[in-house]
Image 1: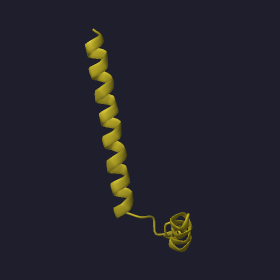
Image 2: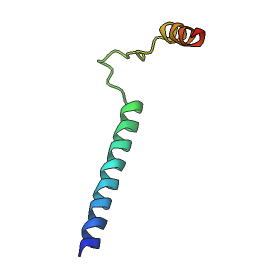
Image 3: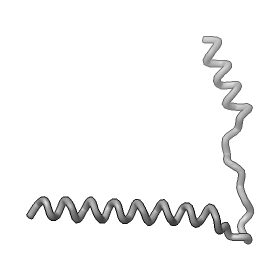
Image 4: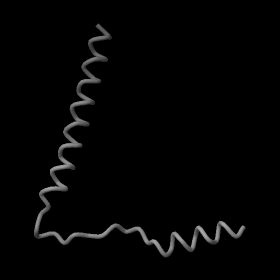
Length: 57
């Protein structure tokens, strides 16, 4: 009986994971035109400065 419960939970977890992946892929393809596209908030200059600072130590 416990094997059946474990199998059911794994099945639900995989199904929810698959739904999330498909939802994100659809969101990438069909963007809402009303929302502006936001660039990633990763600042290359700050990352480079921090890496140089760590390299000097």
